[in-house]
Amino acid sequence: MALTGLGDRWEMAIQRTHNRKMETFVSPSRDEGMRVEQLVKDLREAARDGEPLDEVREDAEALRLSLEDTPTHLVLQDASERGWGTMVFRKGAPTGLVIEVPHPLSDFRTPELGLRMFEESNADVYLLSGTNRFNREQKSLEQPGKRISDGAHSSQTFFHSAHCGVVSPTDTVLQVHGFDAEPGDPTVVVSDGLNDKKDPAALTHLAEELQQHHVTCQVADFQGPLGKRLGATSNLQGQQRDCQFLHMEVGQEARQSLEPQLVGAVAAWAREEFSSSPSNLR
Image: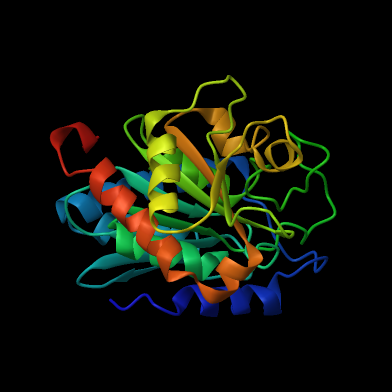
């Protein structure tokens, strides 16, 4: 299945139907959220093991989600107007890497950038929110300074339920965001979301790989302006700590150009960092 270009198409669809202040996003109910968690867990296992899809397809349709089965991927999408989102599952042996994109439109072109990282890094899962984070005025229950439609800061989203269902403790999540870089800023700021004066080896390795590919990178120090603003200490998926969580902020120029060196650096990092092994199996 050719994935190139789909991220841009999905983002433009969100622009038409679930953009800023449209008030169109519909939160999953508690029951729906739990069913989403089980569904995506089952889909990841089916993609890994090549299991029949009859039952899981019925579960998807009951949630008004469409499921496309291609020779290389399973694609789950909201078949309604709720703005829930999209997931792509790579078929075959797992690597333990999940790519997430929570902020289409407000972090413009991250859907396509994240999809290219998913494809080039041989990641297991790609998760994309189906709404602009500012679609609804209603506040997040967990973080009143954020919106209920903000996948990275609200549990009442398909994005968060899907994250909770699809990841396991042996996984690494790379969540892709965007920021407005100013002169002198690095192209990328990375963090694990923990201001504990310790950086996990995977994060250090990622920063090194970016530098080797001539992509300027800063590991958030939580002291300077960039580190305080982009360190992801309030990220809801990062706070869950149900996996290894890495947060990547990408400047607008690199996002606009879909910087090949950036995608190449992530792919090289993933090839060295992850491998198909029994420890990756759930």
